[in-house]
Image (cartoon, rainbow, N blue to C red; front, side, top):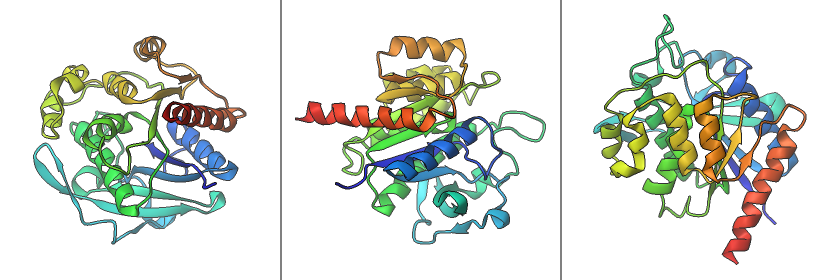
Amino acid sequence: MSKKRVLYITQEIFPFLPEEGVSSVVRRLSQGVQEEDKEIRVFMPRFGVVNERRHQLHEVIRLSGMNLVIDDADHPLIIKVASIPKAKMQVYFIDNEEYFKRKTTVNDMDGNFHDDNDERAMFFCKGVIETVKKLGWTPDIVHCHGWMAGFMPLYLKKMYANDPHFENIKIVYSAYDQEDDKWMDKRLVDKLKFDNFAEEDVNILANPSIDNLNILGMTWADAIAVGSETINESLSSYIKESGKPVLDYQNEETLVTAHQDFYNNILANDEILAN
């Protein structure tokens, strides 16, 4: 039997960004799942603070060169890759000069939330999808980590619903704690309409906050995992009322085993329903 495949879409992963929160969880989880019994791929944004020389990033020419449309404008997609030798893992980076060249992640040098973070997240998610298609790699599970992956479940379930690459996937969305809520561009819903989403699909983003982007991700996901020991009341309330399969927060000792069981149960239940 061929190995099941898990696609990790993450805002960050150690050692490319500091070992904390999302970065730490995704590093331990992806490595552990790969060492157990699954084939994985990992994608993150190529933020300008990622040291390309130290981590030996290089462009993958055969995957780069596509233009992605965001808010009715074309933006070139650049794909880079680097290895984590100790983990025997590769990480793919979604890059673009306009969105990711700046030497920060999601806040500027003064701590202000970037005005175009909504577009950066949209570009990241669409870039991952198109790159996975070019790779010819079909995942069984897509696991989203961090709000920059918040659009991914919507894209997969609506825009790419009939694409054979993704028609049988199961999507898990991990919700994490954050210091405080942030607000994105008030035109976010209009930008999404360029991708032909109906207003009812994205109406929660009429109030375009990070909390609501997380809720959008969980709404279109098949299952939810709690990535932080504590999360805010808005996300916690949604999770309790969602009716979806939920994996509660796991510490370092149980993280990999619990997720393995969670993935396997989701896939097994889907196979039972299919039969």
